[in-house]
Amino acid sequence: MATTMTVKGQVTIPKKVRDALHLAPGDRVEFGVNPQGQVVVHKAGARPGARVQGAKRDRFEAARGKAQVKWRTDELMALLRGAD
Image (tube, rainbow, N blue to C red; front, side, top):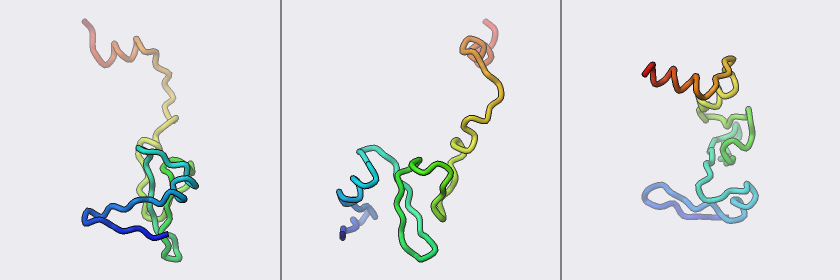
């Protein structure tokens, strides 16, 4: 499967690849290069805990589920808004 890169560096992901990765418009993808020098494409978030070489770890994903405090909505809103 070949595709052409635009002057802006954009390419169209071939339909067979989109279908294999279950990609839909608006989905995020991650690109990386494996030790053999091959480009690897993953649907972002499709492989929890796995990182493509060269990909940065999402700081929010790293923090998700780590809080020990269980806030009630009214308590959190009072804390954020202050006393009226």
